[in-house]
Image (cartoon, helix red, strand yellow):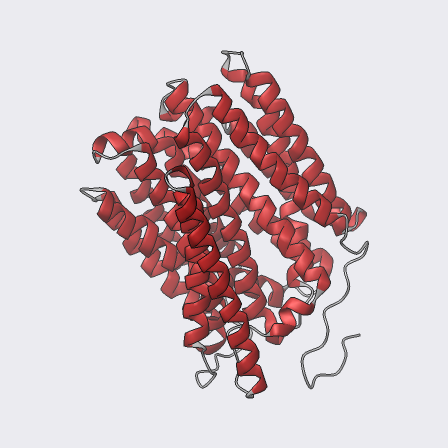
Length: 455
């Protein structure tokens, strides 16, 4: 049952990073710029972040498996449309919009079903370890796989590859069962969905505008913050009126979950930001082709895979908090090594030690961060927290690509590369400081309303 769920996380993470090695090929073929491709990548991540909360909530009404399959179908159509796109506009429609919408529908069920089917901490850690390993490898190996396909065939074939994987997942999904029935009469908060998505979109658009107009950036971010404040006011009003909102305000009163969400945001910001920064620097500054760039990322892939697959053993021996702290320490050290060795060193091997450390660090902490958040809530809130969790993570991915990309596009030099990586290190330090405030043991989730306490 884990195979289709893990493959779904793999292909969505792959889609977020494999285009990084196609920047030159796509920009030449579609007669666009590096910044245009960056916009396509960031919009994909943004659409996921903006729609993940409504997507998670929709699983309660329509059923987890039904949303999973619908998301796969939309994603597959988007991949095929991207493969035949004649220009940047169609590529954004297929890759950024349709694949983003499909991902927002299919990813929350992955985490909800895993949480419902694996009830104890150790088995859940093993299951999430497999899923997060698939996601981490998808993000880290995206440049390698994408580079191989692009060099051997074409960048368009990479989207055909995604469509084929989607077809395989749909076939394997016959083994997936939904332990909870759908609730078709359950209220869906459409105004709340519009407000939450609008606020997130405005904030990331503001970051994207930073290299062109600082005042526009400040205006968009301020507008996004106001819309999100309006969203919080709206859901409070809905709750006071006895109407089920898009998100329960109780989700934001769980200290452990809040801290875990911050660490998730920092982890995906670091993962996607590093992928975009290093891939862009290698291709644009050093002139490496797609396959050379992908091979260099093998070190990060090995690091993520090794530590993620050890999640079950690590969860038995060490507290979740310790694993998250260790992961951030390794990742920060990796960034330091990456900057230090690459400066003035023409060898491609100079990237390997730093990327390996970053990969090991990310693999160590991705699973426990998810476990901390998902385990903090009972079954009847899994749809909400899963959507919120994935939204926060994908918002981190959007920030990573947008912030690093803005610094690089503004000035593609050695100095800009170091500045982008230093910015990512700062985000990792914030994640580390947050992780130190997590409880030393993971508290058990409260029982659902009206249910007897769990033993």
